[in-house]
Length: 396
Image (cartoon, rainbow, N blue to C red; front, side):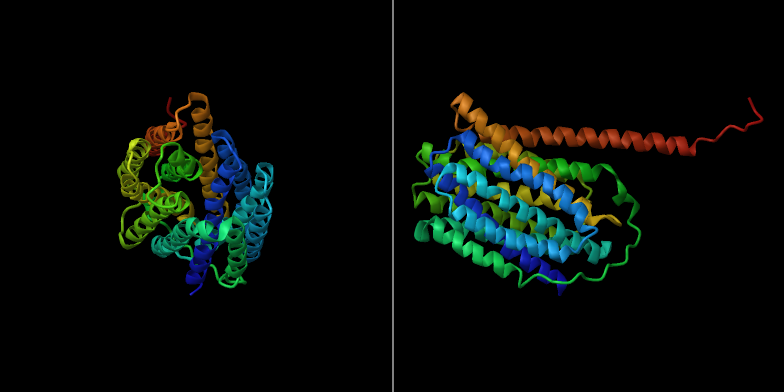
């Protein structure tokens, strides 16, 4: 029952956050933001989120996880109200930090709670449910955000989001739950490379997603795309399809078994993501864009599930590793859109953010394989050293 309450709170909270992140680029574009400034908006949020997640993850292992999560809900409501009052580009930059602090309080706390209250044998299914629910919330946020902005305006949409942020607190358990017993993990699940590989994959995957979230609305307008309906509705529909496909991916991973610790599958998902990013940068049809969107979401699900699973499938320090997982995701969210926006402004090519994102996904595959091989060599050397007979002190 507690797991379902965590999952429902994640759904509502993420719907709030991504209604807001649908509003931000639309409003920034209306206020005349350049591609670099669009990337900087995400950078301000993501740098603060990255740093705060590391600190809050460690704090969650020592302080009350429910209290930190509830403070995160209050922070999201405050961020909505601050962004509602922003009628100049500079004020958008001042409102975004509150959203970053909110998220860094909420996510390591709820993920750490699930990690400490769930036995390792049930972790895969528990995280599957959690991932499905927050991804449904993210999809609903994007799908409804464009529709709401087109009808109620940015101000009305942000007021509704603030009310939902407060409502999130009613779903969240207000007291800590009992810790689950920590049995030993299977030996094959202890390969030390996979946690780092999951972090690298998550960094690149959500960098790709952030490039589309940040720059794609302006790209559609510059290319005369997204005109088959209100452009804001089309942008929300595109992102909604991406994250609805991510939700389907999480559901499939929850039903399946044995997907973890298979690096070939992780690599294949990232290569497919790179291909989808390139395709979306070059197609010239609204319907082709919507048809290609699910590939991004399916690949996102595998990268995120891998990173979170490897972070929590350990005996202790769930808050710490949840914080690292979220911090790395946040770093991808600012690095790729910022670099892509700067490249687009310098080169004059509006496709630059998506081509750079594709290169980041392919580069991540190469880096992950290098990490795996180096770690495997180190383990082999240690194994040989342990098994080698030691020479007797009396023999020379």
